[in-house]
Image (cartoon, rainbow, N blue to C red; front, side, top):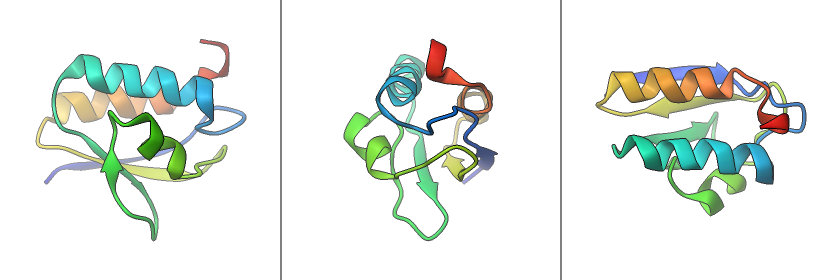
Length: 86
């Protein structure tokens, strides 16, 4: 399964606001995408609780996996931006 790794750019990591933006985009894309941190379990990118449970802070490298490479590109690009102000 294709994967993309990206460092979380949001200043406070994937807390409520950035996680909400990320999860909403994952839902909008409508394809299964999973996300994980190194050594952590994989969770659905469309799950707010799952994404928050990762505990990803600024600079944490997360890995996205999906059979849909376009979705991986969109979500990786989103995480590479500071979502705190969106």
